[in-house]
Amino acid sequence: MPNFIILVVEDEDAIREMLVVVLEQAGFNVHAASSAAEAQRFLNNSLPDLILLDWMLPDLSGVEFARRLRKEETYQELPIIMLTARGEEEDKIRGFSCGVDDYMTKPFSPRELVARLRAVLRRSSKHQWSPQIIAGDLVLDTEQHRLTIGEQNVEVSPTEFRLMQFFMTHPDKVFNRTQLLDQVWGRSVYIEERTVDVHIRRLRKILETYGREELVQTVRGFGYRFSVIQAKQS
Image (cartoon, rainbow, N blue to C red; front, side, top):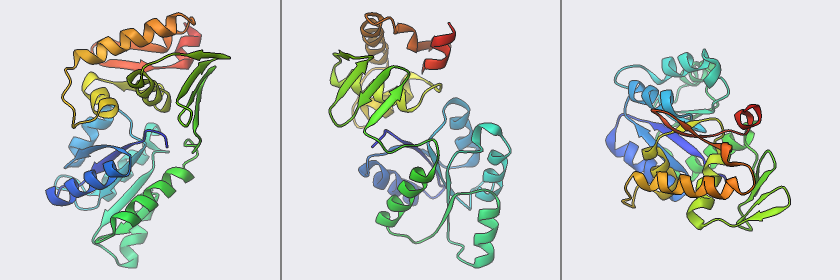
């Protein structure tokens, strides 16, 4: 399964923590926010694969936040699942009218949540559930744990493989060191941020052998980006 990023926007601490645990156990990378403003700050720097959005937020309703996101081209195709205690038909219609992809009424079972989330991701046109991730002439096979450029096998360490998997499933998005540590190494492991720089340099050195070092780009003042399109233009 691709390394999907889920943004959970929920103001109740207990529910937010439960959602993070459930989704991480299901294999997703999770970022949590307690308000629309906090969620927007995350979105300003990174684009998740799906937003799990609570209706009742302290600063802005989830309905209004979703409506605002849908007005921006960047977020028009971003899958959104609304979470709410409102179960009346009129509430559901109002929720769907703001552009969300699915609607779940609290309380709900963790298994149903994960199933619905995967279904929405599967329906999203930009996500293909395939063991092979392709970017230009790079092919990363998650089942055989193999990276190839053209017809040549590329020898990478397990960490570099995970880093490439994350980059290739999130092309043209900028991630800072902290985000890369969370998504590639995990929050449960303490590693210094400079470790990211070390692995980026190693990865570029490997790619340089095949004339592809420009795929992993430094965005000064922000972090790193993987871009096949810009590499072709340069």
